Length: 432
Image (tube, rainbow, N blue to C red; front, side, top):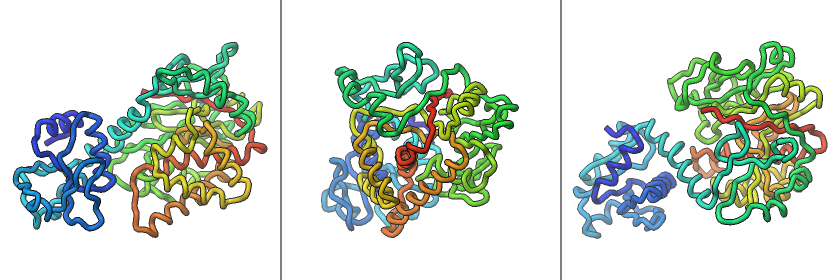
C-alpha cells in the first residue's frame, strides 16, 4: 500500500504505460504536479468521449472505446485513478470496462496530501519561480519579507523579493505607504513583540476571544497548548469522524460541510452565528497567528482600534492578476459583479482594489464585534450568491476558491469603510 507522497512518486516513476483515469480539473492538477516532478503521463482515460476534450494540458485523452482503435492494449496500462472517492466506491466504475494491468487509488490522507499540500506547494513554487523571499525581520511568516521603517523597525508591508531585478523601482512607483493608505485609509501597526499570548486578566477584562482554526489533518492542538485568549476550533468537522478535543464547527447554525470550498471561513461562519458578547473577536490559523499580547491590547484600547488585520501584502502585479493564478477567472468576474451590486461605493472600491497592489492576507483578523457582524453579513451574502451561480449549473468545486475570495472580501470591506474604521495591523507569527 502506498501511504506517502515520496512512495507515490517513486512508484509512478518506476512504471511504464502510466495513465490517468479521468480528464477533469483534478486530473489536470495531477498532470501539473507530476510534470513539476519530471513525470509525464502517457494519456488520460475516460469512460465515454462525451464532452471531454481530446487532450488535457498536452496529454492525450482517450475514451475507453478509443483504446482498441488506437491499438492500445488495456491490459498493458497502469492506471492512476484521479476520481474522488474511496476504492470501495470507485471499483464498480471499472467492473464493466476493460481490465487494466493495475489500478492505483488514493487514500483519503494521500488525496489530501496531494491536493491540499503538494498541489498548493507546487502552485506556489511555480508562481514564485521568479521570486526569492527575503527575511530580515523576526517572527514574520518565513515565506515573505517585510518592508520596515529603518528608524523604528516598524513593519510597513509584506513584500516578495524579486529575483533578478530590483524591487526598488516598482516599490517606489506603486508600493508606497502613501498609496496603501490612499486606498485603505490611515493605519497604525501594533508594537513588535517576541511572543504572542494574553493574560487571563486581559482577555477577560477586555472580552477578547481569538479562535484558532485547525482541521483533522493538522497537527494536534488543544486549549492547553495555546496562549490564553486563543481558542482552538476544528473546521470541516462535518466531513470526518475524527475529533481534536476542542470546539467543532458542525454544531448549531453552521456550514461545516462546505469546508473544502470555504476553508477557515466555515469557522468564521460558526463564530458569527454561535457566539456573542465579545468586545473583540478574531480568527487565526493554527500555524498563522496575529501577534498580540497585553501591551498590544492596551495599544488597541488606547487608540480605539476597530480592526486588526495582518500587515498588508504588496504584489508587483495587480491584485486581480495575482489572484487569478489561484482561482478561476469566472470567480473574479462573479465576485466583482456581486460586490459592485451591493452599493455604489463598493462598485467604486472594487475597481480601485482590483487594479491596486495591496491586500490583507490569510483571513486572519481581530474585529470589534459590531464590525465583525457587519463584515460577516456582507461577506457571506456575497459568497452565497456566487455559490448559487455554480449550484444552478450543477458545478460543485471543493477547491478552496471561497477561502481565496474571502481575502478579497475582507480587503474590499476595509476599503469601503476606510473613513469610519480605525485600523492597526499586526505581524503574523509563524508557528512550527
